Image 1 (tube, rainbow, N blue to C red):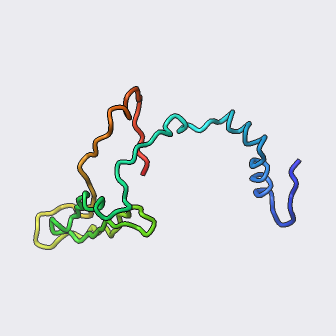
Image 2: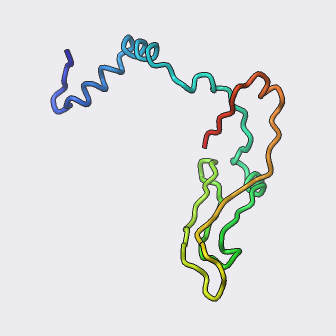
Length: 126
């Protein structure tokens, strides 16, 4: 049933079988993409320019005596990168009981009312 190339193994044979156009059509018919209804998207933040990053606020426990660090930067590909180190070390000589926090936030962006008209749900892709 499966043609095996030498050294290909069963996994490669099965993957190859499901890549055939007729089989792909059957699989897509029997198992449709559950996200197909959510293909519409409106870009809220385009991180290809530096000004967009400046609309975000970075918060860490460093502001409360903690030792966590974080940064929000633009990658070479124009994507936003939120990275850092979480430290659960408690600050000395304080009443702080918990440590190890960082977050980013921005003011909500307006979405056109037409984009949400008739929508039954909202999907956030991160």
